[in-house]
Image (cartoon, rainbow, N blue to C red; front, side, top):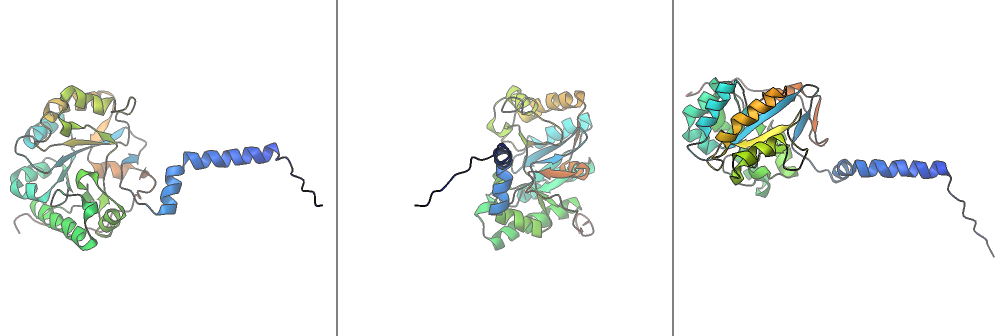
Length: 268
């Protein structure tokens, strides 16, 4: 009869397996993404300065965008506006005011639909149609895009990347579109929806300047003044990315700026 003798594992081996287990748990999301090939948009930037990006989405409405521009001008702050092209086409003077006052224009698509539901050809058409409208109005290349409703998948990320875009998500959500009242919006940004998750260096803050968010103009001055009093610099996304050593999550790659065409002169 053959006798099998099991050796007791050494403390060294136990410690080694413990370390490996800890590493796998700590980085499980990254590991999953690497093995599954999942792509992600940029949620925030890794920076060494107290810099935060301020962003606004607009897809419809007549009443909210202009008061927000007035507030930003009064506070001396520039932001990124992600615009749906039909809204931009209907409000060309307002879009040109954004550009003139130093704000950055990003794409929010053409139709306000979930891009992850589209086939590749339709997705490309959705992005390029919006791009043509926005660049004609602004006279500047548009190279940032925020997917409507934040809906994305690998196809959205890879297609946008192929077309020279960075897909921008957010790390701090004001939830202003839910119309919770100005006090709730202020708290969502400064303190976080979850306790301790308020705006920090490298974050990208999401507001809306559509008429779906009528409380935003009242909340915005308090948010801006509070963040400035804490030493934060508020800026457009593109400027934040220029300051970044990398982006988060790890699956969002901070690439070199693509070669951009000569700016288009509005009206030509």
